[in-house]
Length: 254
Image (cartoon, rainbow, N blue to C red; front, side, top):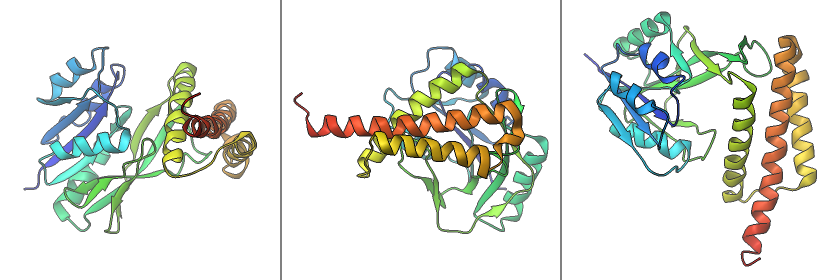
């Protein structure tokens, strides 16, 4: 019978990790790669697995997830984030997919919550994520942030949803805007992209309009508006940080 490995990367996920791992304790193997947590995350991980690996650097999401993948020994791999939950219905769909083996890669719909509200618009629904694959059939891109699962096979689709409890409070929203915009700027710099104040304003405005109007984020009420503003801020700071990173690279002695 095919074995399933669940892989996660973590850093200071004490508020999320136990709830996540509880929903996949039925898996044959759980692999956690932690990058310097100091809040008790590692102790929680050890309650569910002896496959806990520590790293002392942060190479970005893509490379870190590939490190976790390298430790997996199951025939199949399910990649999760600590703020996600596998429902009983999704567990059954995963087990059926593994048994039947019609595809080597599968995607699933994800239901997300933002500041406690289930988001049904704004680009968050429908939201399909590719997370289940036969080991060797896929790997993660090396992007610092917003990594992608790279695979040649067409992906099958599971019907049951993956639950995603993101951004529990405004502090987390602001922290991620700062962290993700910095990583995004560094990623774009490496690809030769250019920033600037005009680009920052333009991309910020476009991101707001996409989320709020084109993707009907206004139907999600107050949280839909907050999400649209947060997306706009993320885009604005990403291109502004890119401008300054580029200037620093051109004048390293100043």
